[in-house]
Image (cartoon, rainbow, N blue to C red):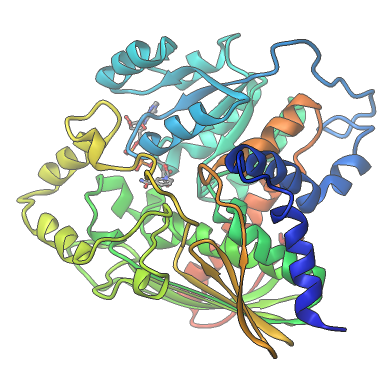
Length: 459
Ligand SMILES: NC(=O)c1ccc[n+]([C@@H]2O[C@H](COP(=O)([O-])OP(=O)(O)OC[C@H]3O[C@@H](n4cnc5c(N)ncnc54)[C@H](O)[C@@H]3O)[C@@H](O)[C@H]2O)c1
């Protein structure tokens, strides 16, 4: 069989059916259905006669005209500068409430969105105007806030990491099951179109057996302005908790999900930033494939040099970026001054526009360089799709760019919520399995040996 033609055929089923005049809308529609069909419509169908907690009952798909899922946002910090416009742009999503400790954020939210603004996450979760909660509070509060939301009958999307311990994951999963709501491990590159397409090509098998996945990211994470908790491992600080879930999700999505064991070494290279700042990890998959994950948050090198100059937001990376980050870091006289700077880039801060937001001419998101090798070909991303290298040389497979990295995640939650079904992908168990790998990276460093895993789930 000619390998290339059948791969291109599969991809072009999606791409060629997009009319030229409405590319964005059609791409969204197709990707939404693709997202669900590809990542597990079969799973959803097979569990269709049970509730989320496993109790038999009839489905209760939501009926009527108003089919918008109404979100409450827990935490209006720096990342909410990305998440608020992304949610607002989704046609089936509304933002009706937010909770934050900072009064200026609550006031601006009430003014800008006309929504309910609370100082307390639990108070927000009691609102009848909220169907789902997006948890964007600091890492050590994810489990608490997700559990509160579930206990009040709200669906929950939790940014990465889903929690800091496996026990907390179990409590969150149990609360969601008991209350018949969905718990999603959100903010993941595994939902970006290029990574989804790579996973699909590998799963389709036309390139033969998967041999290895290598994903490498060099950036300035450690020297960006940080709050103290972001540099405290006990509170989920450092690059393993904060960035590890991205790389682990990429390789688990492409590699089938089931990691057998992990060997890793992390580094703490700067006494002024006493937390993990880099790691190298080797993952062995149940099926025999291997993965390497390398992350350097102290980097002077910028891995966007390897990714066509495009960064994780799908935006062009200007030269000298890391030098500017370090220069700004050196200008802080104290942790308080640094925290005050970080506060200024949060939602409602004086420098809010300096952090996040939607890039005007978005390409595909590059969470570093990911190179996938199968028996009969290698695949990596291009700014507009995938590059496939096989016996015939190199060719590009276009993949439609979506408006935001959260589009597929929101489609997936929305379809499950609307039809009152379990999530077909990226549920609490997936998030727990990804966290298990991150914890194994830390544990393997301590033990200087490989760590076997127990809670992996297939993609
Ligand atoms: N910064 C990023 O680029 C980024 C990207 C993706 C995901 N994330 C994740 O998003 C989360 C938040 O990151 P961030 O950089 O926005 O942090 P941040 O510190 O800027 O924001 C946290 C917000 O939560 C609020 N908050 C704290 N405790 C609260 C409580 N008990 N109740 C209500 N509000 C409370 C704070 O006032 C603040 O506005 C983290 O889990 C991080 O891993 C961050």
